[in-house]
Length: 561
Image 1 (cartoon, rainbow, N blue to C red):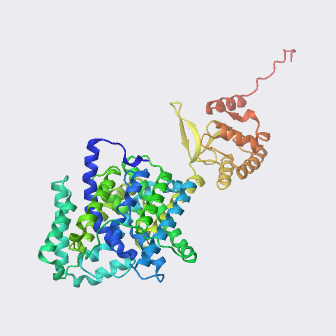
Image 2 (image 1 turned 90 degrees about the vertical axis):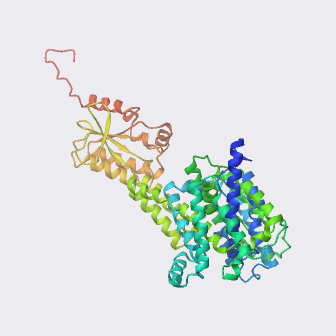
Image 3 (image 1 turned 60 degrees about the vertical axis):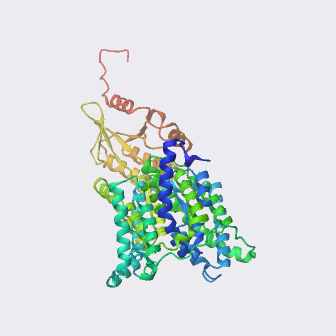
C-alpha cells in the first residue's frame, strides 16, 4: 500500500496538491462529458473522481496513472447495455454498477493469475505510437465541440470528415469562447508556469457565463448537476440479468488491463519509475469495486487524464488524492455554479492535453535512429486513429511480440576474426570466410529453438562449402545461446553427421551451465565429444591450431620407434 504516494516530503506535498487542484479543474468538465458517452447521469462522472480515484491512489503502484471515467469503457458500457434499460434511468445505473462489480472481479482474477506481465509485451516503440494515436483520436473527437459544430459519428475518421464538412457552419460565439480559453491557458503556461492556467480559465469563463448568460446566446453549457455525496445503488437483480452482463464486464476488463498497462508503462518509462503491474491490477480491481458501491460506472487508467496530471506537475498519487478532495468539496458546495460552464471549454482543455500526447519529437528521433521501429510506432498510431484504442493496444502487443520473434528467428550471426589488437570482430557468413586456416569460429546471437534451428544449420553448411571442405573445424560461439530445445537438438545431431561426412568437426565454446545441461539432456554429448567443448574462444583457437600442426618426420637412425 501507498507505493504510488511515496516519497512523503513537504515540498512534494505542496507541488502535488497544486497539480491535483489543476487536474480537478481540467478533469471535472471532462468526466462530465464521459457520462454522456456511457449514458449515465451527469453527477456520476464526479463520483468516479472520488472513491475509485482515492482507492487506486492507496493500492496502486503507478505514481502517475489516473483511474477514473474513460471514453473507451464508457462506449463499451453503452453498447453492452443498449436495450436493457433507458439511459440515465435508475435501472441503467443499477446495471452499470453490476458491470463495475463484475469488472472488478475479473481484474482480481487477473491479479491472482499475475497477468500484469502483459505490460512487458508493450515496447517503448509502440507506446510512443499508442499515445500519439490517442492524442490524435481525442483531439479530433473534441474539435466539433470546440467550434460549435454537430458531430454524430463514433469513429475518428468520420468525426474529422463531419467537422471539415460543417466548417462553413462555425458558431462564432463558441469559437470566440474556445479561442479565449485556449489563449489564456497557453499564455499562462509560458508566462507564469506555476499558475494553474486551466483552473483560472475554467473559473473565469464560468463566472462570465453566469453574468452574461452564455446559454441565451447559443453557447451550450453543462446544465444542472445534482449535488451531495454518492450513495450505493446496487439493487437486487435476477441471475439471468447478471449473467447477461458478464460479456460486457469481460470486454471492459480486457480494455482496462491493456489500456492501463500501456499508459502506466509509458509514463513509468518516461519518468524513470519502477512499476509493479500486478499491484496495479489489484488497485484497478478495488477501484472498480468502489465505483460499484458508490453509484457510478467502471473506471479505467486514462491516458488523457494521466497526461493532465503530468502536465500539471504532479509526480505521485498525492496529486490524485488532492483531486478527490476538490471533487468532494465541489459535490458538497459547488455543483450549482457548474451548470454555467460552457461545454466548449471541456473540448478546449481536452484538446490541449491531446496535443501534449502527440510525441512528434520522439517519432522523428525514432525515424532517424531506427526506421523499422518508427514504422511499427506509426502503424500503432494509425490503428488507434482509424479503428480505436482497443484495436491499437492489441496491435501494439502483437507488433511487440512479432519484434521479439523476429529477433530470435533472424539473430545476428557471423564469423569471428582476430584483429591486430587481439580483439574479435564479426565478418558476414560466406563460403571461405575463416577465423584461422582450417577453422571458423561461428557466432549465433540467439537461443536455438525449432524456428531458427534450420537457419543455423543452413549457415554452417554454407560456411563449410562443397566437399572436400577447406574448413576442418567449425566451433560455435554459444555465449548468446541460452537454451537448446528438442527440435533444435535433432537438427544439431543431423548437422553434425553431415559435417563429419564433409571432413568438418563441429564443436562449441563458451556454453553456459544451463545450455550445457540442455546439451546433455538431449544426448548431443554422444555425438559431439567433450574434447570439442571449450570454455573460451582462445582455448578453441589453440586446440585447433595444435591439431593442424604437421607431424614431425621420423629419423631413420632412430630405432627407439
